[in-house]
Image (tube, rainbow, N blue to C red; front, side):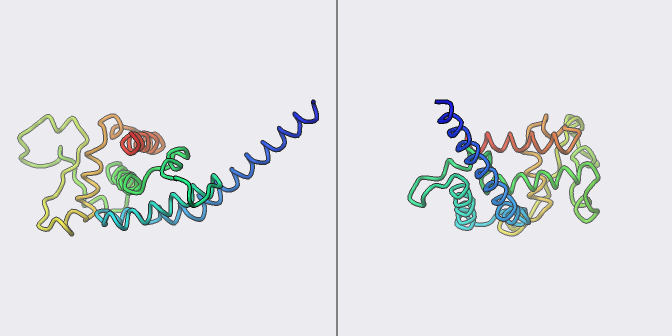
Length: 185
């Protein structure tokens, strides 16, 4: 009986090791390429986002060794992966965090202005918050996809506690948790 239990433990350990190896491989080869420049994908069509989501679902299917005929929409949730639209929002929020805290390049941070710095602003309540000014645009198709507009909207959509985080690690964790709850309910 002891020998069977030992064999069972070694099989489970081998399965766990194989799962960890597969997860590392997927994160290295697929997830990094998907996240590389996904802030550029702001405002893209639902069709393109669905295609990218299918790549993410296929990666999750590979990690769990599921067949292509099986339902896979909840597998990324089990892996704590954000959906594609939320991944785009996450990347924009991280870039906005760097801009607000002065660690981003000047060509990015010069485009984002806190509402507290707007001259002639009547409402003093905005001086307490960390909201960003959303620039007005002429065209909804291209203007809303511009970095200053999209990053300011993504930043302003975060809860105040998340925007007030002092460290990048805490901000990333809180933002991912917020977007994860928003994505999966």
